[in-house]
Figure 1: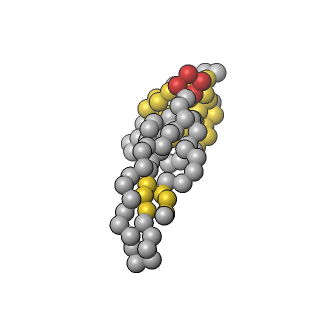
Figure 2: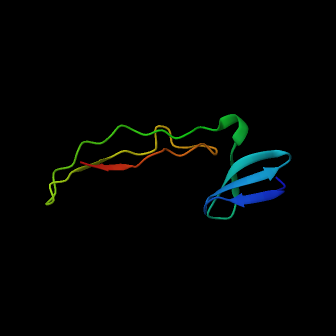
Length: 89
């Protein structure tokens, strides 16, 4: 794979342009690249999981619950979940 352009999004995920296509690759610990996907065909936006049960009340009479952006997690340049991962009530 000949890389023509690299845009580093975080320490492990690279967005590259090669051979006329944009694609995602993972940079492994031993400095190798693993192909992930071409963004135009496999892009998925993130969605929230179900909320957890409410915690017990703390000293301020507050409780919390949470959910994760894993239903599915953003993939191939998909949008992250909107909103907060935790809620206090």
